Image 1 (cartoon, rainbow, N blue to C red):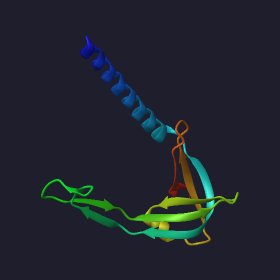
Image 2 (cartoon, rainbow, N blue to C red):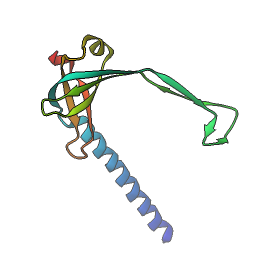
Image 3 (cartoon, one colour):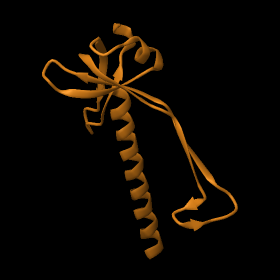
Image 4 (cartoon, rainbow, N blue to C red):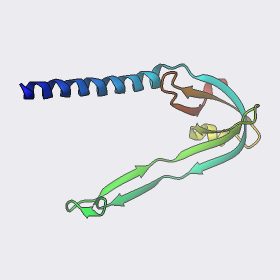
Length: 126
């Protein structure tokens, strides 16, 4: 009998985790973005980099190494009309087309349930 109860608890935990993941994905993918406008006050380019390590922590786990690649990022620091300063992620073409002092249109994505937020340049309005 105890093994049967442990199995049911395991299924409940798995169902809870799947439901939590589903809630996260639903909130991230289906919440409508807000359209915003601001003035570019600074442009930041973060170059790509790669990091290579020999294992987890300080322990070597075999005769191999692990490489992680970080992609390039183009970020515009934007000042809103209300005085807030935000970091907006741009595509390379948008980053090159905008200069300090230019007006930029972007979208604020914020999950309505979990309030996960990020900002992205909106090419449709430019």
